[in-house]
Picture 1: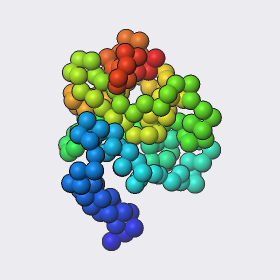
Picture 2: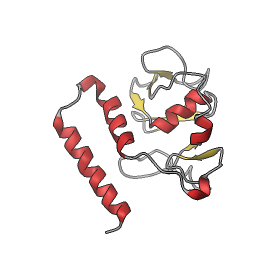
Picture 3: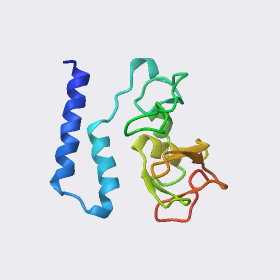
Length: 159
């Protein structure tokens, strides 16, 4: 078994044990879960991606097929990969707070994103033209005319 496969198996076991532990408040579940996964799976930046302004969420170079939509499984409807500002770009500071959860006003579902996506929004709020809704299973526009607000606020995502 490869190191990557072992890490994936260890992570799945970790998630299963964490979910069963009850060490989290039910209303905090989505934030706690995202933080637990981020803490467990912080990507290292491949040598080929160092010095790039944008990379994929796993730190690798942007590929032509990153926008392909996954058709089956728990990530159905999401892109194969998402572009984010590089760690070096995000380290220059944020112009907005780092927020990880947003509400789709059309369906009311809260979606929580990974840290690198949240930091990209905080560094450059207009970086993305759309985002994913976990409730609807597809992407919708963001910005002043978009359908999403940051969780707990009336502020539009992407503005």
